[in-house]
Length: 187
Image (cartoon, rainbow, N blue to C red; front, side):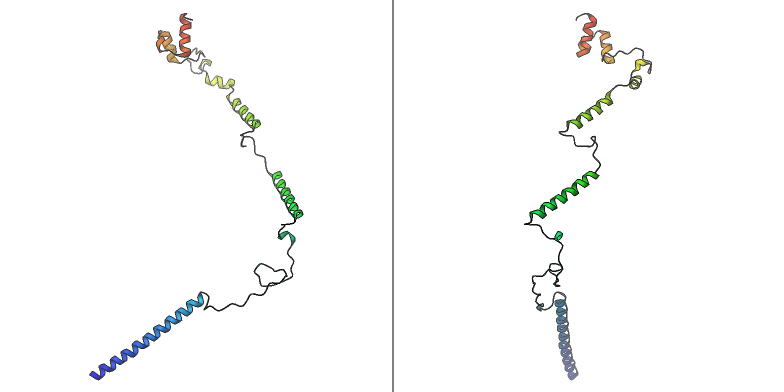
């Protein structure tokens, strides 16, 4: 029985060593896959071709060609004639765009510092306040709307009129007091 347990122990040790080697191989394989996924093991890339005096299709491109880039796509620094030409083109384009715009009505324009627009708006406001015959017919009870009888346009309230009738001078102020003094002959 001792022999079989010793054989069993040796078998377990061999199995454990094999298991350790398998795990080590798995780890190395995982590291290799990870390294290649993130750029390899530091292999040096082929050197970039030398850039000659010829034009390229695009910056950083590797195809050297003799295609000439149109002048409009190059910078104009150091060439005042081209700069002025570009400015004139931009100004003409701006003028054309402004000609197509619908002018803002004075009602919606920013009017600060624009007396013409302010005067127009003021005239419009004052026009709304003009009393028409229709407005007076609807607003004034003395025209027969409410059946109150005679209503005088003296600017006094109903309370002030009753206080004048009762002779309560102490309760009156302003125009009502003047009216009371005039009626009683004090003025």
